[in-house]
Image 1 (cartoon, one colour):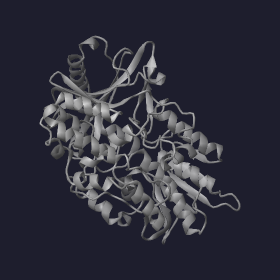
Image 2: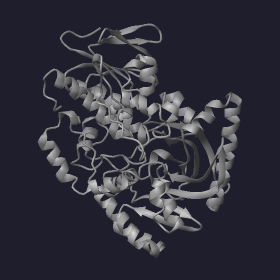
Image 3: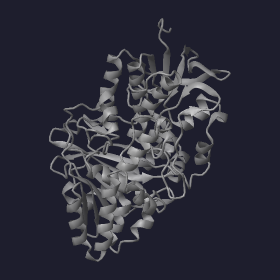
Image 4: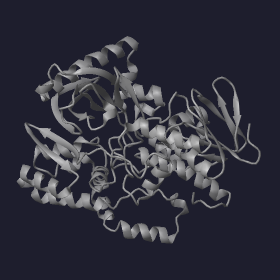
Length: 498
């Protein structure tokens, strides 16, 4: 029942986009109710416990931790971050190893440059060019002030001045893949390094921007892990008067002509609303909650062209090991190939979470590994019956454990298995399309997906979530939630500065 004098917004999904939309809506004076199918907030920004250890599922680094950026303002207004937030004491992006040698991508670019040149003197010219491109990429700061359709000439001039060198990066690296870019280097180790962090099909500029975010101090890791950040946002939402309903799975957005009148649940009940903001995976949105005819053309084109618009997931395993092991480091290692379905994987990473007390217990820390998974891998997992699925997972855990002990002999006998999860885990828990934990991969052959957040034919529905702007991720999710409320305010001819 709506409160007298207040317009009500129904938000579908209690992830980062939904929580952000809810918080900004409350600040703007709306009544807000969030409906979340799971028992906790956060969507994909969560973690879970096994054997008393906490497994962090999401934040490897968080764009927007640098004070003064628009994204930082969003994170602080939603309670995700605070002025006195403590960040993990990590001084490098990751380490790549190959044939007994290693290189590190330090946050200090000069230190990285020296180390890479020492490792591969014959690549000095290309290394210096790489460092310069990363330096230029620091200018690519996520714009989270307001939706771009509301920008004026001054906004574009300001952006042009602040990003004056970044177009050089896009011109050179926007139309080549990481695999293509890696071939510029003579060193096999540096070639591996370039393709380690993101799938090799990604446009090369994506990797440069990711590294630049860390190097610029705008990609810190908040202490307390991912779930705690989501819980801080939930606390802010509730303190502002918002209501969040857990175990409430929306079955349909009810339409009356061009108006969304509210949401209907799997138990048949209905909640009326003046505005509806779905923040769920867009595949679910247009194949369950709304008729498919409302799907925007660019989104339909992406789903119909998986080679050009792939998604990425992972087969991941978590262990408990001694806290003395590689605390805070992310290390990519060469392994004897592991087969999953028809594909083989020759590299994986090991990340040690001992920097955060949340992931430490009784002198042991959590470490996690990942074998990157694609649409093809998802189809393989989906083809297995329940017993096959369990059997394959168990066999892969044994294979992964053996590779870790071969790469790090000091861990022999010290690996305590905690959990393993697959693309189907993300599909089951988050309704994630093909188990993806991001949006569509930005490849050289595809245009970046940028939806406006509104749908032709429905006047009071505003979409948010990471899928409306590739490659997705937490900043896209949060900003889209804010933008949804600003679009409502703009339509009502109210001040969008909230």
